[in-house]
Image (cartoon, rainbow, N blue to C red; front, top):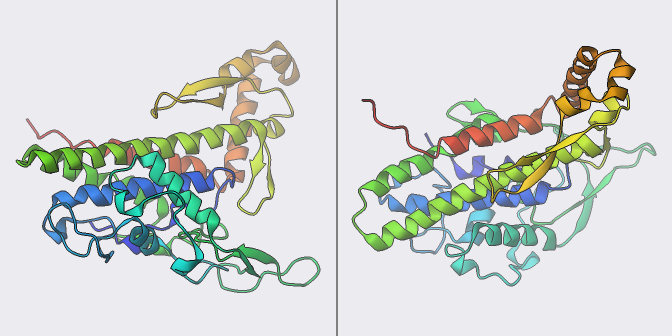
Length: 334
């Protein structure tokens, strides 16, 4: 299985906008540490992440032309509607971050640096274009202008469909299938670590593995935190359009919430609580019974999911969870 690096770009695809930058940067940080971890392999055919990235860094085993973080994110960059030119290095800076030491940094620091670069790129306005490349016009008949030119690192404009052809991995033309698979290289690295004789290399690679796993856990946390927030409070779509909340679909009845503890540093986030909400006397009175309230809840959740690009947010979270589980090698058959 090969993850051609130019095909791993839609990591912060169109979705709720608030945490998109954080999530996209965290996903790239996870891939960065997977890229580093694969330097346990001398044989290039064993590399899966950004195998075609060419830079000036020397790898852990003396591999030539490996990429530093700047090379890496530039290699992951992909043109999109209204953002079709790779930013010149003069257009952005790595603020207070030493790219040459990104292999020693914590995954959160790497993600913060990537997101900072994304925000600091020069801003210019260009006509918005749809998936077919046509200029989108506003109500006044004039082209809608969008901010471009920042180091978007592969951000896409539009709906999920028609934007996934660049994710073609082993015939899988699908972002979610890709996300399910990115944990597999870490499992291979872990197996290789078992036989590693060089203690220094073993310690270094184990550190990269730990950072890749932590970054993946953080992406899952950020995504589910944002999902809960938007279900409870409503949110905004990829272009700033308002998104309804669960309450809007639940006939404006109050939604009770619960705390969910994530797998990332035990951080918690709010999530709608079906059981407590449907137990509420006012809710039962409104719908006629607890059973009817529960049925209304299920329908409201289904309608909300459909409004969220047919549940794309949840599908992405599920795909990442599956990928995280694949980072643990399967035990040999007895």
